[in-house]
Image 1: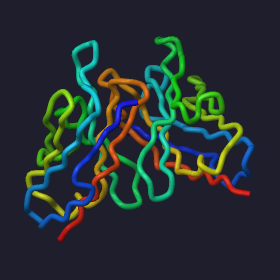
Image 2: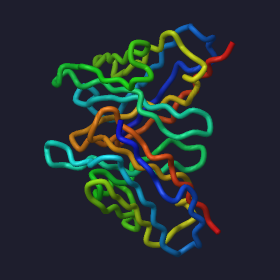
Image 3: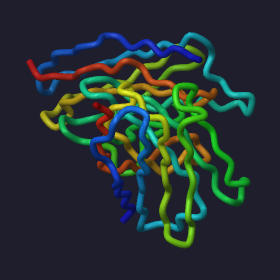
Image 4: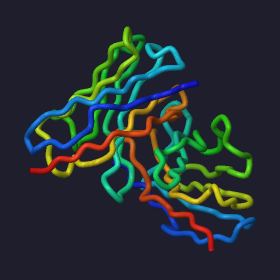
Length: 121
Length: 112
């Protein structure tokens, strides 16, 4: 069974940093791209970015709203994807979801339960 | 960025009756590889999103066959043949044809 578990969320002041983790199980982690999405309270879904598998260079793509502040990385030996968030703004407050994908069909087939990040002074 | 527009934003439906949600993109979602990367996701109250449909009309594993997707180019539709109580939630279309991936605003499905 595929499982994705996010951790690392919490309350942080504007301008500070936070690192989220996504621990995966139930599949060969290194074979897949991994993505992050977010959902502000009461709002819709927003794509944050993804990291390709090592077979595709392990390169990353980001939404314009986070590019230069957020960094996605992966540790295939531990089956963990990370989201390093720097220079946080109040508008980054959201539930952050880790997903598997995009797959070859450019879909995001499994989602974690999410972790809440609150940016407030 | 490609703008995704869903209609309606709210859909009250009687149990056992059909429901339909439309999604329109601001430009064609046909990728240079010939595929159209349009997905539908369901988010039940208090739950993370769940993939229902990918590449317009392909049901993901475990998704009931009362859910179906159709469309082409810039116009897409999600249909539920007979709404059940467990279908309550918000439905999103999403395009993954072009960076940056974008979603519709969401359609709230509720029971009358």
